[in-house]
Length: 140
Length: 119
Image (cartoon, rainbow over all chains, first blue to last red; front, side, top):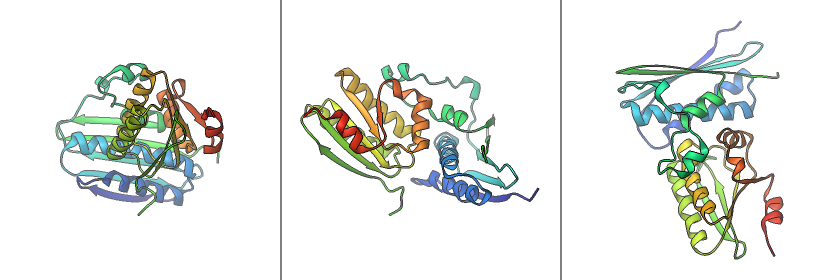
């Protein structure tokens, strides 16, 4: 088992900065043997986590990507912000029928992250929220 | 310019069908531009909108929520919202949301236009 390739980023608040984290994931994932289609899903999950951190977190957002080029490659991404924190269990799962009738149609980010990644763990307290996500390459 | 640079081209194909060709990253600003142009097409009497996403690789959840505003407006007039040329990840995103029960999806623009044009 080789050492994982790692990238660490600090995202300032500026337009489209979330894409930089997505690009880092794509770059490392390709080197580790991931398919483009899988990486496109990981990229969206990372973009969503970064958007949440940038919008609700306050301050710079830290991103760490680790690409494990094992026989079955896997990616681990951690996104950390230093905002007030939140209770992930209190975030309602979005329902399309209800969203279409609602004034506020947002609220899909966490659901997409959970459905696009194999693991999503959120630890949150005032001053530090960390989202840890894992995705494995399947099917060779 | 990168592959994520947003561009939007709008075309009235006939009195019913409006085409929105989207390229690049669909975020809040891009989603608002799409929603604005879609609203103009609906106000002009179109009841079917086709979004060609062949050159779009990523839509974030804010962009998606703005597409839902378009869908809500189309459902109110019993019209049709259709997509074509979805990347696998965008197709999966729409599947997760359950969009396919309200929209149509075609593999490419030619197939979509053949199915949606009324002439």
